[in-house]
Image 1 (tube, rainbow, N blue to C red):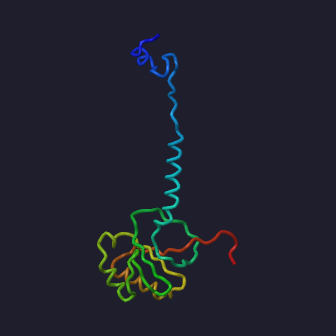
Image 2: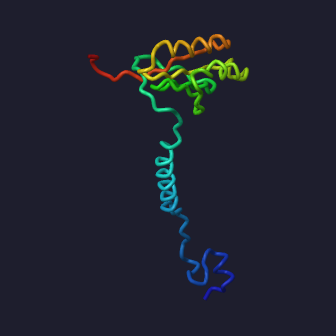
Image 3: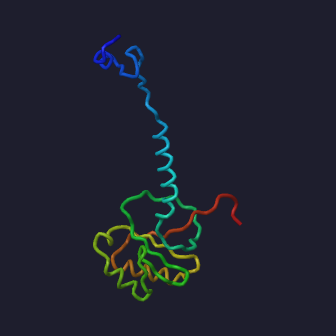
Length: 151
């Protein structure tokens, strides 16, 4: 019989003899289970993280611009309500709100998203207020046109 100290040094223990090889395989089943749970959590949580005001954008077939710094998003809803990101502003206060923007925002880009039902003069009034404030990088956002023949 092998002494207990010799069994431990040779890879055995009191339950397994020293001649039994050690199983050095990694069990990946718990790892896969955790990854699948995390995947499900992120798939459920990701749609809830989108920020914006629901508006019906006009369609246009344009290439996307390369991303730079995060632009300021201005929304004009169907009823004429203007929002700076998620902060609603009365249409009469748009010029005051634009004048209060910090210098970094004024030098950056502005994306203007106007609903299809908004009168053109309201869109141009916001563009004019941005221009008066010295903001020149103004982008008008449109939804992509669907593929296929146009009516």
